[in-house]
Length: 184
Image (cartoon, rainbow, N blue to C red; front, side, top):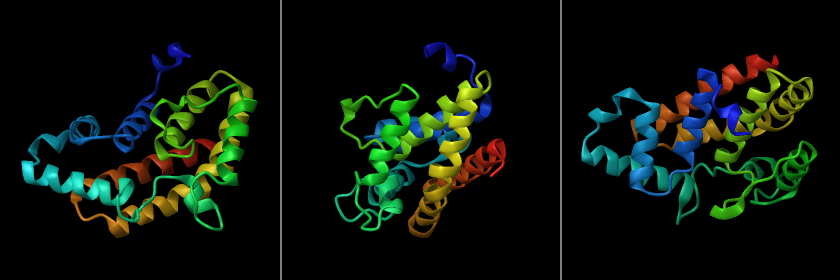
């Protein structure tokens, strides 16, 4: 599958940059991911970076209740719990097309970073395969479209920094383009 990533479109590359942002695990990876995503990142002060890191943790990591949980099951499950039926459903969907999540980071399968990466992978493969085009369309309409808009809304409502609001805007634009690719 490595050759797929060598021929990505700008749209698909942006999806991977968003993935990298949401999977950030410390201040260094957060800053690097945001800098790759936004050209004006170099103008942020040290205090703005600290504020953005605090905001990122409050929204997506914890330790308090997450203000914008990055897990699909929180939005798709009646009890808003991580690793519910919707997570098992996405595992089954992936298995049916021959994919699975590498769990080396102990992050649930329905984390936004995995969701974005799978969308990019399906998009890239859909350009040359009818099988993947069907899977891509189904994944977007039956999974991503059902929860990512609410996730973006939660970020916009709860983000305290321009940095996180900017990322929410980029994700929203990316989602809009994704939807046009499958005509939702």
